[in-house]
Amino acid sequence: MKLRHGRRVTAFRESPVVTQSLESVIAGQSDLVHFLRNQQVGPNVYPGVPAEYSNWRAEQWAWGHTAVLYNQSYHMVDLAVKGQDAFAMLEHLGINSFKNFQPERAKQFVPVTPDGYVIGDVILFYLDENHFNLVGRAPTIEWVEYHAATGNWNVTVERDERWAMRSDGKRNSYRFQVQGPNAMKIIEKAIGATPPELKFFHMCRLTIGGKEVRALRHGMAGQPGFELFGPWEDYGAVHAALVEAGKEFGMALVGGRAYSSNTLESGWIPSPFPAIYTGEALAPYRAWLTANSYEAKCSVGGSWVPETVEGYYTTPWDLGYGPFVKFDHEFIGRAALEKMAAAGNHRTKVTLALDNEDVMRVQSSALSNGERAKFMEYPSSVYSMHPFDQVLSGGKQVGLSTWIGYTANEGKFLTLAMMEPGFTAPGTEVTLLWGEPDGGTSKPTVEPHVQTEIKAVVAPVPYVAAARDNYAEGWRTRKA
Image 1 (cartoon, helix red, strand yellow):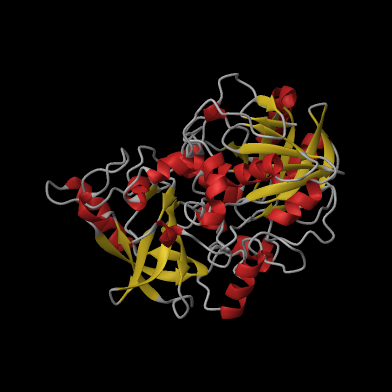
Image 2 (image 1 turned 135 degrees about the vertical axis):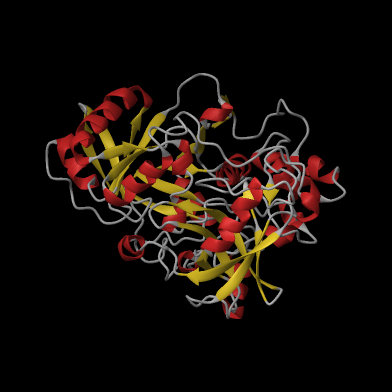
């Protein structure tokens, strides 16, 4: 059995309500790059919470200096995977090693196409024997759903759709994070005991507000903390208990504006472009995906306009996931990744620190009656679901910027970028080509503007020293 978009169906796929597929949408486009760049959607939204509880500057400051409560209950898709073959199927789909993977642990799960390009990434929770939960954006969730529905696997899947795609006012579970220097003090007060000392991405069970809570040792901005989740009906009691426990420790609630910018400090590229638009091997998958799927609706933005859509595809090494690639099991894309690994010459994930004066030049153009640069929104300047801006040296493209914004903790505009060999050393000077060509695309988040170059300096990733020191090697560390 399988649950898709809120209805239970058998393991074979019934005729969908929407008859058009992603494959037919693609077939109707003469220029797929142009189509994706002009999609009428902006960046991913963070529903269910206010844009700001106080103000985004104070909320950013709190995760680096006191503590914050992130409410992640609304914006991500959850997929429960159960059954005798659940472990084997997920191992077959992921580049990650599953050796020593056992209940009460989690990992960042990364599937790739047969050609070795990233489809997406999610957090994979190993909850109990034959019971897993995947949490993240839709592309990876849909890839797993497809294989559960079409493969010879003894599994069931149940999709808990994100808030923006539902109208029933509830989900299967809530999800909170307590992060920051005071996080453990808050957890201690909330549970009335010393918090257990867990290794990174290990789990345990706690009691908060009289409710059993599952806790994952995690961190979103390099600081220690827990991710906490449980049944939706316990949402109110657990949230209230955490808010009360955090009062004396300066804990701030984080709204949607600040939440989208914490990745700039922690170094995670949060929106890999799903590399599924081409290739005969993926034609059945594109035919399975509907015209209302994420892949049919997502937008691309920025100064990088490749000749074909493959120019947006990324490898695990581009995203800092090279250490995840383990050839100790058979998985989709293994042969392609073995060739890539042998060839070397991978792009490397870095942080780019933008020049303050050049940023001010861009900002001040908004105060003129002449030509204006693309507006740089605070704190996140991302204006599409998948941003790609060119990084240049001497007029030659040497990398791609994928996420951009401002951090009050560092007083800088930063981008997360993938750089070619020879341009990855901290201190290397480059420029970011900011803005779209030809005055901009028709996305509603894009106003008429001119492109401009912004000086930048290559810096470590994560940019924040606390994150580099505290994250497990191979996750968001600079060694990744």
